[in-house]
Length: 596
Ligand code: DGT
Ligand code: CA
Ligand code: CA
Image 1 (cartoon, protein in one colour):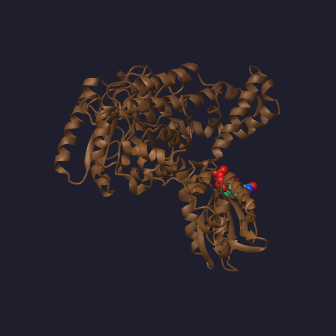
Image 2 (spheres, rainbow, N blue to C red):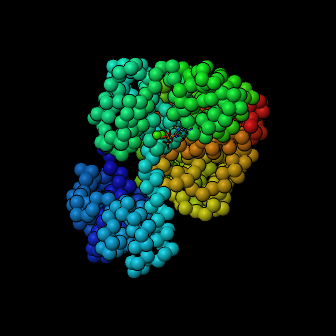
Image 3 (cartoon, rainbow, N blue to C red):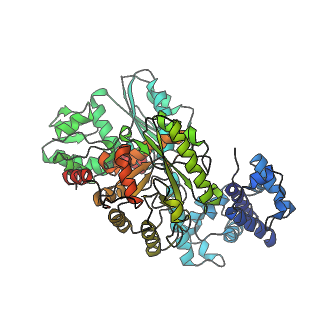
């Protein structure tokens, strides 16, 4: 494991927080905070300094005590002081710090005065009006805390799709082995590929007498059984995730799968449509009077309503039923449509694998091209590249391209978009690349107008190909930054550059409605893995799921283009072509055919 400066900074920040909650000496706390900030901005790896036996005391603000802590963390990945502090304090108390407006001092106050140690206790204290009684807290603050804690609790109950899929696959494999189980499938938001999932909804078809419910509720991961009957059961897993299981006879499989896949809005709309044609629709089938006319497959139910099959990603009542009736459903992009990936890192910056390993992994996936896009120098904690290191990597890529068959590495950079919209590397350097991927990695908090201007200005640079993870959201920890997305997309269209759907499971950025907006604006979307290792190309399936929810077809996606078609599109974004900066005719024709 390689410890980055940021990892050590995070340890110091947490130590400072915990000391602060304990009411420790202010100078001591400040020393840890300053050290964390210094490490965050340091251009060199302190782990390497330790390995080379360099003197850490020479760093600003680092005395012998902090130097030995840095050495300890760099060598072991642990810090004894942090572990001790964590044991001394209530385990969940740091979660309170994530509530905006609650710093360590206020957390200490609420703990000492009201005994608040968990988010639930904080919510209860706010609801009972006890917080406004504590010195320094008013009614307004109390309300703000209540709102924040509620949204936090709600958010924390949803899990990332990637995690949910793993859990669901394991349970489904278990269920499929139970005697009398014919089919075992996932339904709910997971099947619809939502970016996060509130609970798992599983469905089995069984023969009479199958012990499936008993086996399900006794499964090793189950912590608590909420309910158990013959046709349904609900449990809570040790991880806190709830799982609902339904069992139906095979003749009702399609109707039940349709019903429990939802979304609720989609199934309600279908039921209304059924009524209009004199049918009744429920989880057991479609009925005319008391006669079941469909239900064994989903397609049979849709057909009974006069509709073609609607793929789960589209089932949100966002126009898919109208499109189905008009026989104008989009044919969604799928994984095998992707010809390459336009955003990936190697161990030259913060990735784990070598350039060659990444190239070979991309080739194994059947890709024709892979763009290497390291971080730029501002992102010191990710070992971002300066002009000199980038020039060296360009040579390495030339050498590899000459040697390797069947895969082309494209030369790129994930260049930081500075606060004023300038890019983190000079044009004279960027001009040597095949593409420039721009991204923001700091100041996510700018007000809407300034954040939007920042992106527009970046796109106006002479070399700008692709806006990576445009909103910067991280599903577990950071909301999307406030930007005027329609304006950004309009600009991308005028400029002839592209936007990304970053497939990292915690990003999925752009999200589904934004993808659809890009499509409607005629801006091509690149579905990228943002791989930091050879395994990360696996992220792409989640990007494809999100793209489907955003109604994207292969033609709407930049990296479905073979290299020969991609090249001129990228060239144009680098100011190197006489081709006007406008979308491809193929896209425009397609857009008109399927647009809505
Ligand atoms: P989630 O769990 O919040 O990520 O979202 P879903 O869509 O999985 O919602 P969930 O677990 O409450 O319900 C699963 C499916 O069951 C839902 O998508 C549609 C169906 N369903 C649940 N309650 C109702 C209901 O009251 N009416 C209808 N028509 N369908 C329902
Ligand atoms: Ca669910
Ligand atoms: Ca459910």
